[in-house]
Structures are given as structure tokens and as C-alpha cells.
Length: 206
Image (tube, rainbow, N blue to C red):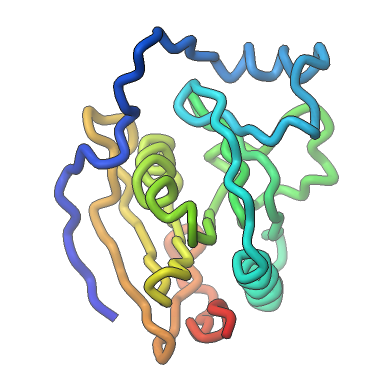
């Protein structure tokens, strides 16, 4: 396992397109869902004010997602809950992470999704989505102040753990990145405290 400081990066910025893009606020996005303009059949999520198509998931991606959920459910303490592929609400985005650990039971949330102050850990599983998850998702999670972001990197067979988010900034990012290989153990940190450890091999299929 190694720890490095991350310089500001312009990778993952939205490419120039020949036509103007129309950005949506989170509120307008919610109105579109409530009005039926967007339904569960529309495979999109709101990222930095833009409707972005979700990536298709390979069988290995799905297997890793199950391993992550099962491993986290075994170790999170009372009062914390593990959800999968459900939205969280940020200032300009409503991503749907592969897993999220929150301090609020979704059964009590009838008119909203968890906000950043209720999120302890976000996980994205990445194969074909690696560039998006390492750049766009990392940037918006850092901007939103998500304290810990795990990237389950199936391409390079490792887990990347991002911490110390910048919050709103010209180039939002995490100040620290830890890389965990199969023989390592990842600390599960919630509210700044390591509550358990998980072997990386438990999260990587195959």
C-alpha cells in the first residue's frame, strides 16, 4: 500500500462539443422525475449538471459490486447502512454509486435522498467506466466533500482510496490517494475513525 499527494488535474473535463449544453440544477432534475419526463427506464444520472448515460455493467462488475456490499454489510457499525446503486444528492449532481455507506436508514427517507452530511463512504466499481470514475466522479465527490471515495479498479486489480477532499475549489480533488493490492487490508473509515478492516481480495472477483 502506498500513499501519495495528488496534484490538481484537468483530466476528465467535459470535452468541447459543437452545440451548447443545457445544464440542469438538482431541483429541476427532481422536477423532471416527478413530472414523469424521466423514469426508471431512462438509464441516466445527473453529473455536474448534465444528464449522463450510465455505463453498461459486465458480469465481473456485477460480481465486484456484490462483494463490496457483502463485505461492508459485515463490518459497518450500528447506525450505518449500506445501499447499492441508489442516488445521493450533491450540490450539482445526483450520482448513483455502486455502494454508499450512510448514517441514515433509507426507509426513513420518503421525500429525499441522502445528502453529503449523511454519507461516510462512496464506492464505484470500475472497468469500462474507469476514466469517468477516476476523473469526473472523483472530481464531483471531492467538490461535494464526500470524505472517503473507494474506486474498485478491476482493470488494474487494485483498490484506490481517496480521502481529504478539497470541497468547492477551482480544481476539486482529494489530497490523498492510497492504493491497495490483493494482499493488503483496507481500513473502513467512518467519521474519521477506522471501524474495521477488509482484505482487498474480498472485494476483487477472480
